[in-house]
Length: 604
Image (cartoon, rainbow, N blue to C red; front, side, top):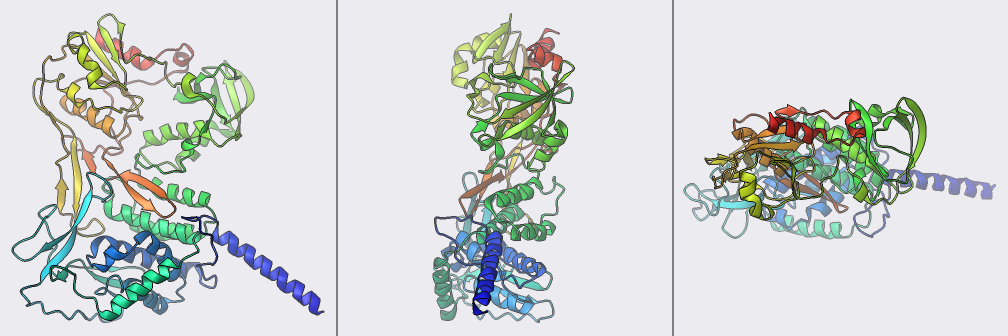
């Protein structure tokens, strides 16, 4: 009997361990292995969401807007991992308040966390009449990561300041006073007193608690779910406080936070985590979004390329040793209609409608090694069922459009084609010839990698400006009371001889984004030429990054770009003066219908 009891206990232990392993997952930011769980399974999911909601809100407020010296001594990635694991275990509101105070008061001794029905008492005991005291507060130009974005703590008093990034400063006494979940609120000073060397407000006790907190953080040996919860916390805050396009995008990012947390709590693996990141970032409609697990970053690809033509999915080029032919229409993929299959891929892609379609086609092209797809093909009215495998493919023989290898070529008498990879220095010997040409066609369908601003100087007889490029000047969180914009990045291009006399045509589609859209924006805003093809991506503005635990970097747009008249560019892009729709017959015949349209315009 005792042996049977022992066997039953052992089986129960194995089952509990299996459940724990499923919940925790196996991903980790370092080579350390997971050893313990952070989630108390006796908590309801609702309580865990409330706990993490409060932690996430405090995390962003204190990391980015509270100027204490202690906040700069913290490894914020490691703190996010440790803090989510600690806060999520709170049993109720009172317990949560205590845990949040244990986590945040050592870093920000002057903040207050309180329940809705509590009276708030200012406990900061500082002689504000002391004339030697000054004030300190954060200024942000976008999300600090790389140029042109930066942040700085500014020391100031009523009459002077040192090294400001911009003119505006917060009002002395300003606080963040916000709910952090359904039952807790916070007061967080964004201006602190300083004696010129240290910020005031800490005590001997708070300093000891900070040392203990750092010591506990450094003992961490368990990651997995902690990493994923921390990643959601950091990414949500970086976008909440620094993404510049919320006015153009239909999302209430604050209201989405509980659903992000709930999904994070049930992730079991890195793949689940990446799917959650896709789910989050899709909602902000940002064509710059990219991270390390996007499907097209896999090294294996199909032996053909595809594009949309006549509203169908069509093979545009193929390697010789495959059963596929240029012009084949793919009607279904793994039993799903092709358009439905692409729409499912678009659910994990961020950006404008034209960007989502383009990236779904790109995502289809790349996959995992030996992954197979079952394709139903329509070939001249005959239905075929063919299987294709992702493999190691040299992309040299594949291209969505008929390839022109030359950087510069006269494609018809007096009409020149300029490839997208050409630099101004390469064009310099041809400037006089091009200036007298009947027309010049510029390629933007593959994006644009080189600086063509000097070339624009030959298109105009007066100075022209680029679209307005504006970095947010941020003092307060949640995009409240924006201080203004830094527009120093906007270009002015002066005219230069010789001036191009013929027609200028620019070929484009959703592949053109960011810098390419800035160049095309100058063309559009100043009527310098014809734009032929499809709308560009509608994703302009230098990128910044959100650095997440686990070596995951999420790039998103960091500044706002609008057209020269102040109208919206984001999601709309540069719209063509002459729209081109690809056709199946054109693809079969090997035609480049964009170039044909450009030549037609020049010859009119």
